[in-house]
Length: 529
Image (cartoon, rainbow, N blue to C red):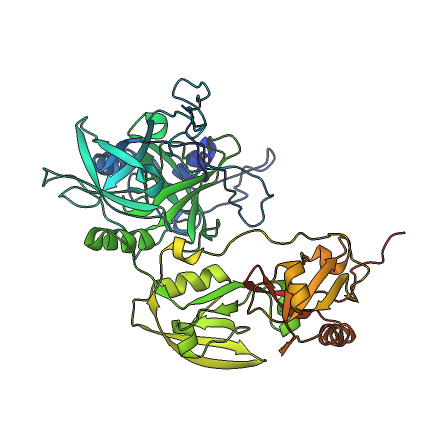
């Protein structure tokens, strides 16, 4: 059976590095000398080196012996209904198309013997129940266990194997798709060994960590590595991931990441892997997030998050230039939910939210995370950039709806680059053929009622507009800080931006969903004949 899903992985620490650090930890000096001169060329004392506690990194045995009883293997049976479409995650800076694996997800493509599944009479595959394994760890003496959501989300039965070889049945307490965390519980015990999340002391980048779990159903496996980075954004709105290089493999999902004092600093969640095996990049949910989420799951079986009621996007380089602000700052408000907290608090489409409760916002994801920690009824202090001025607002947080309620807009729409129609009078601006949004244009382009502006009727593929992603059927609602009522409005604003040698800011409505676009007004280089 293939175990497929998406995520990430980590590489092992070289033995030479371990040996060198162990040598330094003894208090000995590092020395180099030439054949002609026996005097030391370099002397360094242990006092200038990070001093680990006794037993590390000379050996992790004492730490493992202390924490291993709290780590469990999880065997899950779940029902399969058919192949799931692959969904691409992408880490900024890595090429598109790299595969991800979330270790512990039931197979989607093949039967347990590896043969293709046979379809039922109605054309649906006749798939057997899937078997999957993962990891978890006790966080209380009375049987609460933390694991990953993707390990148990479709489970019909959950079995837990303890370090002492006992096998117990567990039940689901609650799960949270947004952080990929879940809590299960085994009943009938009051003295289970457990470990605690460490929310105060944070290991530094380069400090040792130990991952313990159940890779490839081998159970009770320990791997060691270092913290590689903090604050990794792998496409999830609610987690800044901890990156480690301790090897993680399939079945490690949900296991703990320990520091050298045996404190839980993360929950192993995802690996980056072209092959499904460890390649040196692993990701864990940080302890402070995991602690908060699991406490909510235990107390109520669900997680509630703060809510503004806005649609947002990152501030691109072109948008930043058009607004005269540094790139990678703030989150831009595309639209406001009618009657939502943001509308009541005075937030407007086109605002760039720069701070939340005094904390700088660097992206749409960072805004979502900051707002999410609020409770319903909390006052959220916003600093927004509006028409070049900083405005202070206060918004009373609502409760974030579930994800299905937030993603109700349909897909599809007119295609870019359809043939032009000579009988229609268009204004050409940066490769777009613009027309007034009259009833004929609405019918022709499929523009929804209530959307107003200037319609994009054609787009030349190799034009500035085409390369920026504009499509036939888009509606330009605003250009700069003014409403777009005619093609002439757009043309005039573009010419003004071109004279100022900066991009022009457009508010585009696409299939009923608004988004801002910073559009260059000049070519980067002369066209080649």
